[in-house]
Length: 76
Image 1 (tube, rainbow, N blue to C red):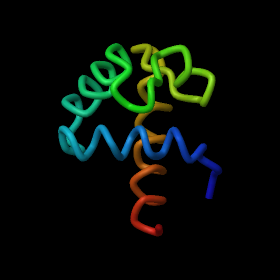
Image 2 (cartoon, rainbow, N blue to C red):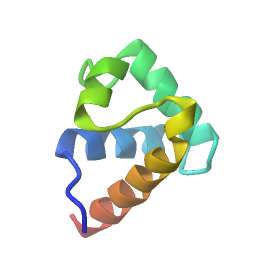
Image 3 (cartoon, rainbow, N blue to C red):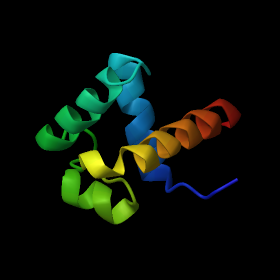
């Protein structure tokens, strides 16, 4: 299993708790939370440094990170 930064995992799980895991509603919520820095003050730039891009051309990778975060959230 790949390593996922705990802050990034927690960000994704926070967004899932707020909006659910259905796509594209989850993407919209992640973008909203990042834009308003609602989770630990993290914005798009900070999330990007942690490995999460919310750019439309990165959606495949974003979906993989969501799946990984959900799997890790179930473990812990």
